[in-house]
Structures are given as C-alpha cells and as structure tokens.
Length: 338
Image (cartoon, rainbow, N blue to C red):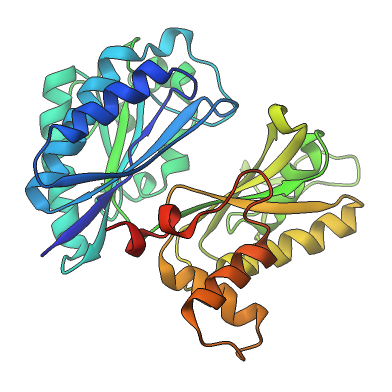
C-alpha cells in the first residue's frame, strides 16, 4: 500500500469549532486517516497531519481545506507565525512505497482543484517548484498576507494555479512535495525574543545579514552580504510564547539525516549559554519519524543502547520533549500511528 502524508497548516489556533469541523471533514473521507491536529494559540495556526493512499490523501486534504476556508477569515487574523493565507501551506510527503515525483503530481492536482474551487492563487514549492525562487517557502511567504495584494501585481509572482487576484478572505496557498519536515522548537527561559532570534539566525542555513561596527547592514553592489548559518537543512527564527512566558527558537528541520534533532538541540544550548540564558527542553510540533527519535537516543546513549523503547524514552528525556506538555510516543511517532 502506498502511504502519503499531508500536513496542511491552517491560520487558526484558537477556535475549537473550526478544529472539530476539520476533523469531521476528514473522518467522512475514505482511505485517509487524521493522525494529529495540533493548534497553537500564540502562533494562531493549527498543524494537521493526515495519511492515506493516493486517492484518500487528495480527497481528505481537499475536504479539510474546503472546510477550513469556509471558517477562517484572514482579514482579522493575527499571529506570531509567518503566513500567506488561511490555508497557508499544504505539503505532500512520501512515507511508504511512493516517490517524491508521485507526490508532486498529487500536489499539482490539489492545486488545480482547490484554486478553482476557492478562487484562490496557489504557488508550488520545494520539489514541485517550477521556478528557482519558489523552491523555498520563506521566499514565497515574503511580505506575508499583508503584502500579497501588491505581490500579485508583480509579473514575477503570478501564481502557478489560479488567477492573480487578491482573495482578501483567504490570501494564497502554497503546496508541493518535500522530505519529512520536523517542526522543532527549543524553549528559551526568557520572554525577550532577541535571544531566540539571534540563536535562530546563527543556526539556520540561510544565516544572517553581516553588519558593520555601527550595526548597519553591509551591502555590495546593492546586495546584502550574508553570514552563512551553522546547520544545513535548517530554517529558524525566534518567537515569543506568551502563555509560558518564554521564547522559542522555532526551527524546521528539512532533512533530519543531515541535521538531526539532537544536533539542533545541542547547538541551541551552546548559543543560549553564550548569551547567558537557559534552555528548558524542546517540543516537536506534529509527528516525527521513528528513525529521528532513534538517532537522538543513540547519540545520548553513546551507541550503547539498542532497545527501541529505551532509545525513544532516552530521546524524550534528554531533549526535554515533555517540558511544556507530555510527549506520548504512541501519539507523536508516525510509524506508531499508522
């Protein structure tokens, strides 16, 4: 059986009625299963994880997105997390017996249908990208929802599907196929975002703008000079988590074989210590592959432990994954869910 995961991110993190409606829409769809629905009030977004075969994942995602679109209005949306629209990003991820190319085709079919149904612009990213400057989600999101109306007037930013017409209620959608992304946040014991922001800039692959002794950004021929980040396949930024009175280094690990979870955590700890602040555990948003947890377990046991359950438990302990809320392997590890 082919297993494809889809992780739509919707711009609503507080309305339980919306969450229940999305769950119901998926439950009514054949050959797809809702694996998790994780809202965050500060980010004001919800990460939904579905898994199914080719037909099931397409129909389940379409039904979830149609439902979300009927209930979310971007004109009144505020949140800490960058976003382009109500249905912000919809990645299709190969899990078992399916290729990235097949997932790209599913994302294109999704884009074709949803752009027509909702009259919303759709951009293709990652492996589905048709232009080099659209491979990165952050590039497409630049300017966010608030800058989208002007962006659509730029001929370089015509959508891949749908008309270049600003939908004030829904914004735009980004879809495509990618490797299994781990949404990973490291908790910093300070509500001053400057610490987590600096750590995120130093660690993320894209790095940060180089500045002179007066703090001015250095440019050559009009182009900003960048200092490369320390970790490959990592995107990062700093955010405030008001409900816990902390900030977080919010990271996307786009290839956990290149930069494992434990590497991101340990490097965050080093930088936090340099800045004089403490790290208090971390969290995984959405699901995580078993292998990523085993990698961390092997690292912290120095390769001495081989039992799967023991390795997972050691990873949970050393990464502090239950610092904010209990980490339950049976509800967080994708292989244990399917």
